[in-house]
Length: 165
Image 1 (cartoon, rainbow, N blue to C red):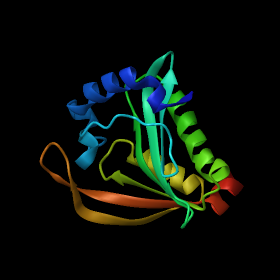
Image 2: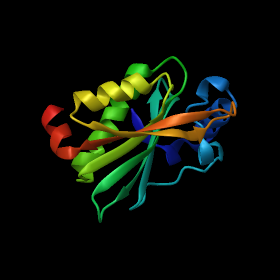
Image 3: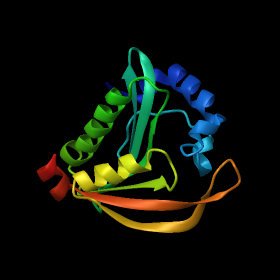
C-alpha cells in the first residue's frame, strides 16, 4: 500500500538509517541521497511515498515534477528487505500510474547505477511499457566503495505507457 512518507516519519527514519551504511544498499544511497531529509507532504514540485506491507516500510518512491514541461523525474525508488517485494512492485506501478493519470504528465525520466542488482528490472519495465534507454553516462557516480560506476538513463512516455498498461 502506498502511503505518504510524511505519515510514517519514525518508521521511515528507522529504515533509512538502517540501510544507509549497509553495503547491500550501496546502489540506493548515492550522492546526496545519503543525507537524511525529513519526508514532507507532497507539494507542487515533489511527491514522496513509502510502500507498506504488514505495517512495515518495504520501499519508497519519490519523484519531482515540472508542470511546464509536463515531465516527472523519479528521484528515488528503493525496496528494503526481502519481504514485500510484490507489494513494492505494485506500489511502484501505482506511483507511475499516478504520474501519468493523476498529474497528467507526459514523460517520466529515471536512472539506475549500472551493476545494481535491480538494473534488469528497470530494463524490463522500460521495454514492457514502450520506454527507452536514453544513454549511459560512463563513470558518472561514485559509490560508498570508492569506485566509479556508469549511470543509465531511461525515459517513459505517457502515450506509450498508457496504451501498454
